Length: 337
Image (cartoon, rainbow, N blue to C red; front, side):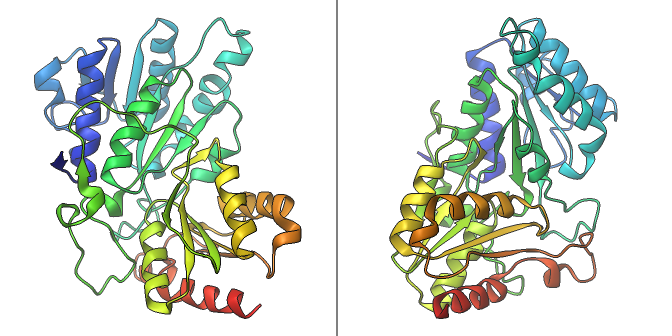
């Protein structure tokens, strides 16, 4: 076992995948020589050569379009979009081509590609470097959508995504790259080296897609979270003393609805937290599925805590960020319901 940051775990996953299968290629803006803006691919070009890890032009539709073509020729591209906010020019390629490949070819072709992108706020990135667009992809049949919350899961989920025969959107909460973040921006951030989930097996392993993880068992209320919000949930529970069960979804599509409904039927209450805007955010889908499956078990309305329906502000970042105080208020209200 080794101590790794999420950046190091992602880099290690790339390395192991490329070493195990010469069909795996890695590219994107500044991904090769520079090693990526967050250094998630540092050293790969030197080790595997410029034909397997290389820089692409600043053209997201071109990056994804080229990767789709590579899959038709039997390659397994892992591409990086420098920030999730920049993915929109490639959205047509993802939705109309990558996601449809298996279906439109009647199964003759698949599209084994991974699209990695840093997501979320908490780093003063402003409105064009802080977005959380996961709901745009969970709506699309043919895609899988993954959001890891820690180094161990990041490595195992990325290796599973690379093995998967269909396109996977892999969203990396950039606020978690170097350590867990509990939402208290005025407190020191603990590094991954001091956190149990910073301990990562150095060998090749996978974490199955479509399987959630219960991060904390409890009996009073179920909290559904993913990415950075897992640690916000832990902080809020510790500060309120409420016996909450915290579920880290890990994969949004396919969704582990069985783990969710088993928990909600036990607790009778459900609070959903995510960083993306509230209207039509993924929390709305979660709320609908919980309501349909657990209606007769609910003792209070399902509550969502999310980003506001505005562009992500720079000057007022912590007013936008769904921190522990907002979640604590929601938990107390649900417990009184």
